[in-house]
Amino acid sequence: MQLTSEQKPLYIKMHDDDNVAIVVNDGGLPAHTVFPCALELVDHVPQGHKVALTDLPEGSTIRRYNVTIGYTNTDVKRGQWLNETLIRMPDARVLDNLPIATVSPTPLPPLEGHTFMGYRNDDGSVGTRNILAITTTVQCVSGVVEHAVKRIKAELLPDFPNVDDVIGIEHTYGCGVAIDAPGAEIPIRTIRNIARNPNFGGQAMVVSLGCEKLQPAKLFPAGSFPIKNEAQPPVVCLQDAAHIGFQSMIQSIMEQAKAQLTILNQRQRVVCPASDLVVGVQCGGSDAFSGVTANPAVGFATDLLVRAGASVMFSEVTEVRDGIDQLTSRATSPEVANAMIREMQWYDDYLKRGGADRSANTTPGNKKGGLSNIVEKAMGSIVKSGSSPISGVLSPGEKLQQRGLIYAATPASDFICGTLQVAAGMNLHIFTTGRGTPYGLAPVPVIKVATRDDLARRWHDLMDINAGKIATGNATIEDIGWELFHMMLDVASGKKTWAEHWKLHNALVLFNPAPIT
Image 1 (tube, rainbow, N blue to C red):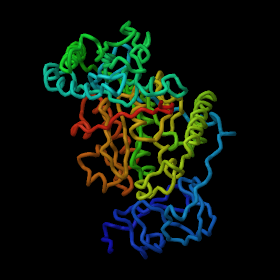
Image 2 (image 1 turned 60 degrees about the vertical axis):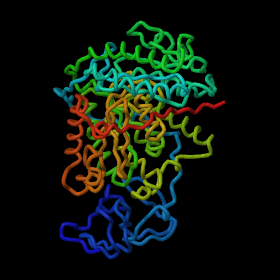
Image 3 (image 1 turned 135 degrees about the vertical axis):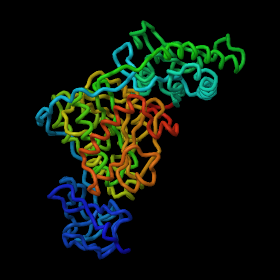
Image 4 (image 1 turned 120 degrees about the horizontal axis):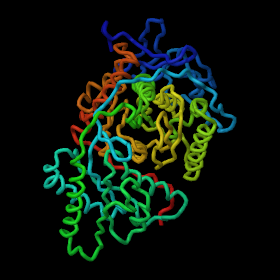
């Protein structure tokens, strides 16, 4: 392979004290490639993979991000490809004696004057979309709801131009479960809080079977929707004696849907300050560039949102676990720091019961993209949180009640994390990817950020922003951060993302640590 003059060999070293760097060039670089610093590659190094910057005898500490990401399990030469087979992962950081609220960053000036056009709800929350959502109490009714949603879209929705969409909230819960067991509160409150998402306008609609364990009264107890003075939202129960046949069930759902659509259609977009945004940030299909380009740009945008008074949630327990000291030190109080430690310990115990640990996180695609283990992945993931103080912590399924930078504890699974952030009340989602994924969510718009030029070129009609320009020197982290911030305001005002354009969305997946009977 012969490089042209425009394809100068490039590597990125994240910190002066690092002893490894990652190769930038598309397709990687062949053996004997010489960098401007005179480093010569011993063998072929794929794009995004690590090259040793110095000789590393067996047992040497490997540093990236100025953090120990592992130890060599054999002698490694300067210029050699340092892949995951040559690395022993360090033990997890113990959760004792962590720095607690020790960092007091200099407050950044408020960011004022930025607005978007949103739907203001009676409870003060703001939607970025105006959606009729039909939730369920049990998976048994999902097929009926799917059939009804198709008919509602075809026969009713055209008459209600101010309503963006009709969606069914399908899930695999509600019966055949230990409904009162420890842990069962997580999926139940998740379903409840999804129905309260601001993009649904507080106009919940429920389809029940009738005999399920998760009865409507348990799912929506008194006070679930206090602004409407309802113990429960409107419910269609398929086992009601009034339903004679399948078409009777569909007709009942459509009649209720028409009433809900009539209410939603009265909503109009109004000028809202950026402080009304509730943004969830997440990464999936990550590679070694995630922590170099896209995630730092998201972190910059996160700081802009916090300065504007908005709420930002970052998540994924196993993808921050190895940087827990970085988080507890940024907590605004000991109570916030201890809440993060509590969530880490809960998840350690949860994985241990299943015979697993944090190392189960990394995927074949992560490793192909240059991420050798979960420690390296976590260092790149955590930077999505920016530099602002962490002012709150949510347990899985809980609803957000405050503004600022929030740690929302979730599994790292894309679909489960997204589901829990929807339940927490996000109205806009940011998703970074290096390997590429057509991920989308029906309840909220998803802005996807590519980590590499090559992915942005190949998936030009799936990726909304290209952060790969940072790696090649064609843009700065600040440039992409501001681009993302302005795109968030545009999308919140109604501009469609590529996922919305193609109507791509993943199923919502509940996190259920409780037993199934």
